[in-house]
Image (spheres, rainbow, N blue to C red):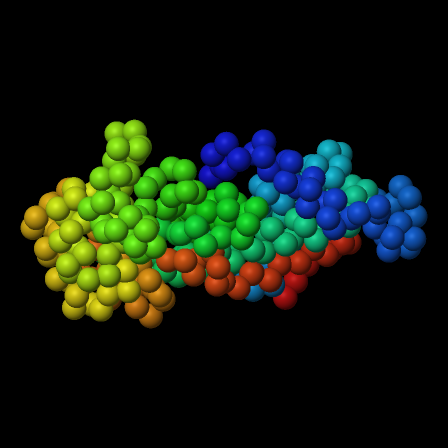
Length: 291
C-alpha cells in the first residue's frame, strides 16, 4: 500500500521534522561516538498490534543518509506480536541515531492508528457498512494519518475543506437553513462534487431530502431516531448515502451499524489512539529474543 502521491511531499516534511529535532547537531552522539563508527540494529515491536509506516521509517533514514541499509521484515497492515522484528538498519552509527527518534515516532503513531482502526473494523465484521475517518487529524500529518487508517482496514472521508461540500450546523445557521445552504452550494460547485448535510433530528432529515443532497449525516442521534431516519431516507431516496457520526466508540459502533447506515465516521481513529510501543536496538540480532 503506497501513499497515493504523498511521497514527494513526504521528503520535504521529513527534512523539516529533522531540522526541528537535530538543529545544529546531535551533541550527545557527536561527543560520545567516534566518527566513522558503524552499527547494525533492529527495529522491533514491544507490544502486539497492526504495523503501518514501515515505508515512512525507511524514507526517514534515506533522507538522513542514503547509504544506510534498511531491510523490512513485515508488510504494511500485518498483525504482529510482542517481540516481532519489523526491520533492520545498518550503517553509520551517527546517522542511524540521528534518524532514530523521528522514524520511530512516525512508525509508532501510524501503527497506533492502524491498530485502533482494525479494532473498529473487527467490531463491524459481517455488516455492510463503511468505516471512515474525519478531519480530526494532527496538523501537518493528515495524509500520513489517513494513510494509516487505510492500512488498518478503514477508508477515508474527505481530505480537506476543498474536495466535498459538508454542510454542518454552523453553515446551516449562517445560511438560514438547510435548503438555503444547499441551494447556494449547488450554484457554486461543479456538478461532479457531492453535497453532504449534517442533521440532528427527523425534521432536518426531511429538509435535506427535499433539498436533494447526496449524503445525509445523522449526528449524535439515538439508535431509535437513527433507525427511523434510515428507513425514511431509504424509502424516499434510496440512492442517498446515510452516514452516522458523533461520539462513536468501540462500544457503540456495531449498534450504530445495525441501524442500517451506510457509513460510520469516527474521529477517534486519528485523535484518540495509543501509539504502538516500538524500539530500535543497536548491536542486536534478528534472532535475539526481544521482549
